[in-house]
Amino acid sequence: MTKPVITATTLVTEDGVPIDAVHLPGPKDLAIIVAHGFTLSWQSPRVWRIANRFNLAAGVITFDLRGHGRSGGLSTLGDLEINDLDVVVAYARELGYQRIAAVGFSMGASVVVRHAGLIGGVDAVVSISGPGRWYYRGTERMRRVHYAVEHRLGRFVTRHWLKTRISPEGWKLVPVPPAEAAAKIAPVPLLIVHGDQDPYFPPEHARQLYLAAREPKELWLIPGMGHAEVACGNDLVDRIARWLDHAVRDPAALDDAAPPAAALDGAAPDGAALDGAAPPAAALDAAALDGAALPAARAADPGGNGPPGAGHPEPRPGTSERVPT
Image (cartoon, rainbow, N blue to C red; front, side, top):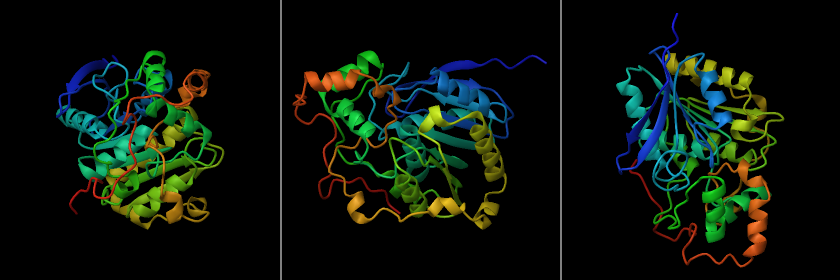
């Protein structure tokens, strides 16, 4: 039998940003949309591997978030990217898929969670290595990501070396955080997958998402797993695909499933832990930033002489975005 042709297309968001997407055809009962992490694109080998693996079980659409790859616009680090996912969901419906699941990695995880909670339109959601909140810089790798986002020189390096274009304007209003959006996802099933060795976001982020969400929900805390696409092997992709198939067919059955014993080990983060004092790069996957580029840039620009307001300001009273309940 002839294999269906894979097609790439350009979609346009509600706010006028062209989004490059690729469709891997499959059975029309389920489409899995894959949202990549920061600095990646659908053409990145690790993203393409995961998309093709999911394609063994379902139709797949993956795409470049704004400011990445062949899409237009500038990255807003998980804020306006929900518009990117929304037009891809509409495209999947146009293709005739009956059910749609959104799977996101790191920054892409914050996008799928926020889209499901604030806009909706999907039948299942999977967050992999995603943040529970903004303003997190408790790991060395996240501090590197913050440097790339907050400083003019960091954004220059990210643009020219990593082909990722970051908006210098910051957030006008602080977007609804992932955990707050997670509370609005039900009755759509939510799966949270996180590694206990994640070098960007420790497991407390996954627990925060899980505790905020309502049933049906599951938390898989994977022993030995690192961060996002690079840590998501084929066996885990297959396991997620099986969960999705079950979730979209009989979501009510997930209500009776107890979370793994490891899922809630340890205390939930306390209020002090959630009070961030740093600009919000929490939604980022910056495996590519582990090299020498940003340390060298930091040495060249120790004062961080970016333009006033570069990066993302701390939230001020009365500026947080709110969605009616």
